[in-house]
Amino acid sequence: MSCLQIEKVSCRYNGHNVLDQLSLSVADNEIICLLGASGCGKTTLLKAIAGLLPLAQGEIRLGEHLLDGPGVSVPPEARNIGMIFQDYALFPHLTVAENIGFGLGRQTRSERRQTVEESLQLVNLQGLGERYPHQLSGGQQQRVAIARALVCKPRLMLLDEPFSNIDTQVRMKLILEIRALLKGQGIGAVFVSHSKEEAFAFADRLALFRAGHIEQVGEPGQLYRHPQNRFVAEFLGGVNYLAAEVVDTDSVQTAIGLIRGNEPHGLARGVQCQLMLRPQQLQLIGDDQGPLTLMEQQFLGHHCRVQLACGELTLEASINEPLTHARARVQVEPHALVLFDL
Image (cartoon, rainbow, N blue to C red; front, side):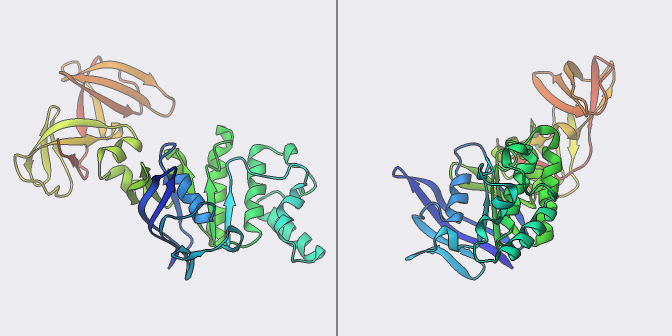
């Protein structure tokens, strides 16, 4: 079932379309990431969903309810949507418990106390209700913001760069905790980020933005392994492009030899194209007689980044152990080939 449905939405700013005829859906209990560089429109869409920006065109529905459309604009406080901001937006003069219970005005004092205590336990902050935001770490402040958003039982959660102010050492742990929390509560979420690493770890699907429109939507692994164009390929990680000629239904000839795929690529024999290879897809074998010449090698802890020359072609590979030879041979394991037009 669709939790959120966005149909042909346009938003204007200073007379220009920031979003142009954009459509997207979010399923119940699905986390989708709006991924892209600064200024591409992803935060604009988040604000439009929240009701903080008017639509120039299109519709936004939450379940069966129309939030925005011709003649309709439900105010932000009536949308049943929770929002978590980059800077947490906590009230500095209120305690943790008071921050969480801020939106529970209709409950009695005892009901509010019990609800707040349950929320503190949910985000692993039990015993910290009397502290003030400045007495907490960044990760703890983010948990308070999440508890405050969840306490009103929203149908949808919006997260705007929620991990950018978190120390690198604890960021991935917090990402996994919040993902598990949203999944456990059965809440759909729309998450804005410019970090592909955060997106890969947190989201079920990615919507990759460029200049107010979506280039590709899909599961993180699908976009990484099967990008529809060069922009998607390069945004999500390192790439090598090799001039290639189609040999048959599943293989191409390149400067480093015949590369075979494990499924048909759909191009006719003899077609000239470019083959995309990720650095991780190149398997290097040290060989003093090999066709590749080692140019540079960097040890990065969990892998080694290697640059090699093959004639005028420069390749980048990611390998587990440093090369001990000045030259190398390369192998490419069969995979679904990604081929682009010249």
